[in-house]
Structures are given as C-alpha cells and as structure tokens.
Image 1 (cartoon, rainbow, N blue to C red):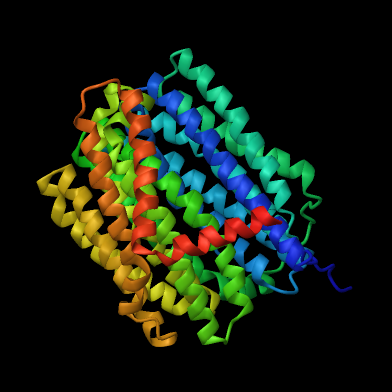
Image 2: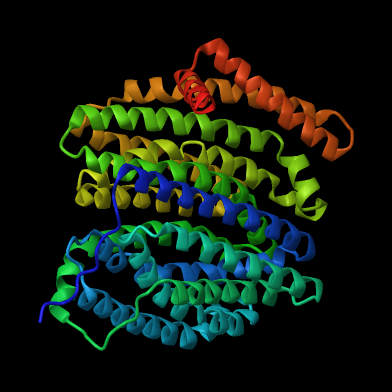
Length: 487
C-alpha cells in the first residue's frame, strides 16, 4: 500500500509572510532572552567556567552536525517525502546519536588528559546526553518546516529558553559553577523536544527503508560535509586556545565573540531566511536573482555594519555595565569579532544565492577553499598570541568574502565593482561613526551614562552620514517604513 505523504503547508504569499513573522519572533525573542540570561550568568560565573564549556561545546557542536544536517534538510526538500522517509531518518539519526554518545563517553578521559582538565571527563559524559534530544528534535524540526507550522518553533524555543534560563540563574546563585551551564543546556534541549513532541502531530512508525535513505543521502551528503567543515573550523579556535592557553583566556575569547555573533545571527539570519525562498522562486532568472542579491547585500550591510562598528566603539563601557570589570579581558576580542562579522553579509548573501540556484557543488568547493586558508592562518598565528590569532580570523574573513563573490561573478555577472558599490557607502559611514563614538570613551564618567550617550550619538551620527552620502539602502528602508505607517 502506498505510504501516506507528508503534505507541505500552504505556500501562498500570506502564509509565507506569516511564517516569516513567526520565525523572526522566534529568533529575536529567544536571542533577547538568551542575552539577558547570559548577562546574569556572566556576572555570577567566572571566565574559567566558560572556558571549560567552550571546549565541551566544540565536541557537542561537531557531533550535532551529523544529527541536525543533511538528512533532515533532505526531508524538507523532497517533494513527496512520506511517513516511511520520516521514520527511516528518525531511526537512523537515533542510531547515529547513540554511536556518537558512546564515542564521546569513552573518549572523555583522553580528552581531559589532553587539555589537562579533569573536570572535562564528567562534564562531557553528562552533557553528551543532549545528543539524544537533538536526534528527536531534528526530525520534529523537519516536520514543522515541511508543513510550515513555524508558530510551533516559536512556542517550543521560547518555552525552552525561558525555563532553562530560570534554572541556570537559580543554579548560578547557588554556586554550581560550570554545572550551571551544563544543566541549562540539557534543560533547554529537553524542554524544546518535549514541547514539540506534544504539539507536532507526528510519531515514528515501525517502518524502515534503506532505499529511501539512499535517495535522501544523495541530496544531503554535500550539505552535511559543508556543515561539518564549517562547524569544525569554527570550533577549532576553541579547541586550539583551550590547548595552548588558559581556561580564563578561552572564556574571554568566546565571550568576546558572543555578542557580535548574536546580533549577526538575529539580523542577517532573518534576512537570509527571507532571501532563500525568494531567490528559489526566481530560479533560472539570472537578472532578477542578481537584482535581489544586490539589494540583500546592500540592505544587510547597511544594518549589520553600524551594529558591529557601534558595538566595537562602546565595547569597554558595554562590558563594564553588563558583565562587570572581571570580563574586561574580553574587550579586544569583542572589537575584533565585530570587525570579523561586519563582512558576513557579503558571504551569507552570495552563498544563499548559490544554494538557491541548486549549486551545492560550488558551495562545497567554496567551503573547502575558505577553511583551508583559515586553518593555515590560524596555525601560523598561534605562536604569536591570542590577539594575533583574532586578527588572523579577521584576515581569513576578508579572504572568505572575496572567495564567495567569485562564483556569482561568473554565474550572475555580479562583479567586484558592484559589490563595492553596495557595501562601501555603509562601510565609510560606519567607520566615521566608530571614530566619533569611540572618542567619547575617554571621558572619565559613569560607564552607564557614557554607554547610553555613545549609543545615542552613534545612532544619530550614522543617520546623518546616511543622509549626507545618500546611501540607497537608507532611502529604501525609509520609504518602506513610510509605506507601512500609511497602511
């Protein structure tokens, strides 16, 4: 008997807009809550606690790639995926998570000895339990995306984030140290999985098919390899710093990246989420795709660049006010992370366009080239210290931005000159704003008052330069806001 097909959700314009609104609310809401929780925890915990977790999360994140990527994406992309496909993937991913847990469990003592941190053994063995929750969650996520029920993402992720945040703050006040972060992560994954389990009307059946998995594997393996390369490269910094430097220095390095990453993920991530289906709908129309790509690069750069340069300019007062003076060591890494992430819109937009055109082969080649150069720069910079390593990451980011533009130069005719036209006006306005705002930090006054003054002056300065330089993205966004107000 023919398997029951999993029907995709309504793809009308209203449904798409509704889904995007719920997605933005989910991403923005969870990021705000996590930000507040992280600020509280950072004031209660010490850099050494975060240093331990940075190493642990490196292993967990890499393991998660095998669970979260590839097959679950293939379920969403396959037009006629049915109950047999979903159940087969469910059992396979559950098996993979079991294998990974066993590997991490028995590797924990060796990892602890390698980093000369005894606590890594017990922490890694406990937090690896999260892999089982992630395995169940991966198929649930595929079902929600397939049927476009993004409202369920909002409630599950918000519920898990709020509840686990409360648990984390209570344990931090009780003095549980690094186990605060372990428990918080486990609680978050467990609660998200449970909420989706009761809200998503899907349960695995006792069916399995290797032939179905082969079809899904043919599509998903390149995505898995690309995600694995990208993930391993990102975690390589934590693994390397954890080996050659102290736990506290690793904690400061990672904390310095946290805030810029949060801003980039919220703004640029939401924009790319809108861009992917839009570009896919115009697949084959090169001129139209190029037009959308240019507008995306221009708009996302206009929004991301002032956030990054502004955060870099206020970094010292920001750290003192939010995290306390014990975290001042993370300020240089925060500033350099802002410089690294300000170029991300160029990379993400061009890569999204490549994927939307179905060229996952080019996407994989780009990832390999970027990561080879990045790893070489990383290992060359290790002997010179953490600051040179952070600068090396900025250099690799510049190289990565250039590399991602090259394919679309041939495919779409999106030339470097045009990329500069889309980015440089916002970049110049951002640099000038940075100079004006950074100069205010030398005024010796209350850090909170100065932080507020810097933020206000930065906003006003950037708008003034946008008007002065007649930046197209500013005009476009201003007109769009006026249209929404008139409605």
